Amino acid sequence: MNSGHSTEEYRMDQKGSDHDARRLPAVELGDALFRGAAELERTATGVVPHRLPAWVRTRGADGQLLMAEAQPAAVRLAFLTDSTAVELDVLPTRFGFRGGPVRADGVYDVDVDGAHSSRFTAEGGNRVWMDLQTGEQTLEPGAASTLRLDLPPGRTRVDIWLPYAETTELRQLRANGAVGPVGDDRPVWVHYGSSISQGSNAATAAGIWPVVAARAAGTDVVDLGFSGAAMLDPFVARVMRDTPADLLSLKIGINIVGGDVMRRRAFAPAVHGFLDTLREGHPDAPILVVSPLYCGIHEETPGPGAFDPEAMAVGETRFIATGDAGERAAGRLALADIRQILRDLVAERAADDPNLHYLDGRELYGPEDAERFPMPDRLHPDADAHRLVGERFVPLGLERFLPAR
Image 1: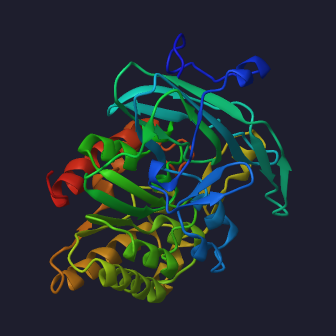
Image 2: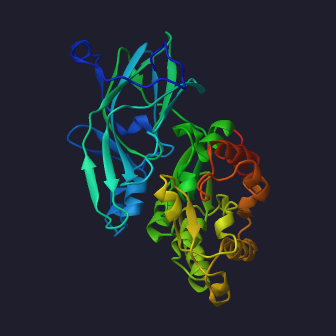
Image 3: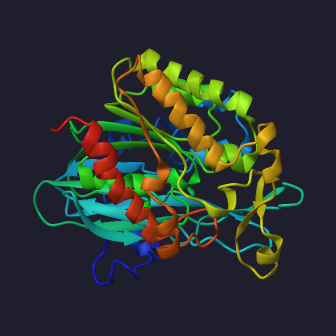
């Protein structure tokens, strides 16, 4: 998008009135131009991609899930075009905690004919500030930005990956040539998980580990990673049941422990129920159950997790575990318990379901990796670790279970 700036340094400038007078022809932002979204919300000024359909959003989903599903992790605008100039008007809405560290603005990644081309951050945008003490939210409205992509002559495939941790309203798409949907016959991988699967602490839109894996394996990914909200909700299982998929994977556990939302007695039946629902729509597809990545604070200590007040006091974000390891015998869960339950549960079910498989998450990121690439906030891997997890998931998950095409 726009030449003359390095892909690492470029920030889009707002375009002025002279630019507005020379606008390219508008292109309809139809559903067929999006990949990885469940549906588009039509607003008065554009479209907002959602990763869960509207019927789920009326099922009493809590605010954390509603915020996360509206953040378009692994959602991309994908199209074929013979244009040499493409412009996209976007209005991001970013979230932060009042008095806490400010998260860096989201970064778009652009692929042209399957190869990474450029990356950008949209200036302006809305800002929602959340008060940790009261839960009150305050909106600071901002302006939209225009992103411009200059392309070589000829027919080209363009994928614009949207930032994973901010809501994006796409106001208008414009181009000086024809724009049409991509006919895609790649295998579809549908993945469910937590904030790590959504992308927390990754550097860019395509730097989140599911996208790293999908791009490396030539796979079409649907990312249902929800920050702080992977709670085995039955309505999410129904969405996955009804979504076409060649492979389904579930990375389960860190939010269950961090939120302290289940005991041992409730957890195993909830996993069984989730898997039963998936099998209603995907009777023969491979399903891979992935236990949590290594996370030192919760390996032997149950939740709930919390912000570290000492870190917050100096403008940093770190997490702590506040549970009591002595209560594990009474059914409270640490990550070690989650892994044992999942391993045994999958082994039991696999006797009648040969397409159900288990992967220990420590094979993707284990104690040795935590030494090399420590989690900066003690809960989420950094950009290098996201790349490591994605690269490891290719042979352990995608190449192992997806049909070659």
